Image (tube, rainbow, N blue to C red; front, top):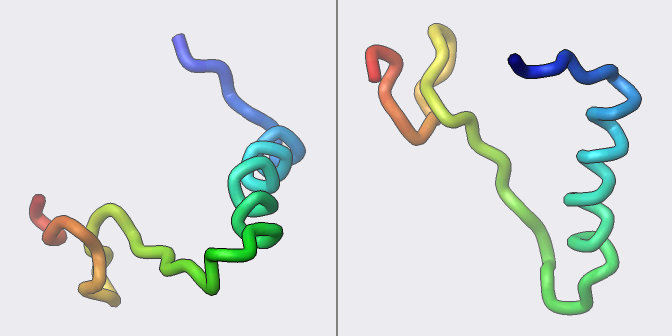
Length: 50
């Protein structure tokens, strides 16, 4: 059973991933993409029908 996380927990986990990138002298940026396409966009790694 997967425990539901709170918004605060999500933000703490996100900061733990993003803050090291922001403080890195070698990372100049990053790109976020969706795992799958959605109805109004087709930029995911997998197609809408998977």
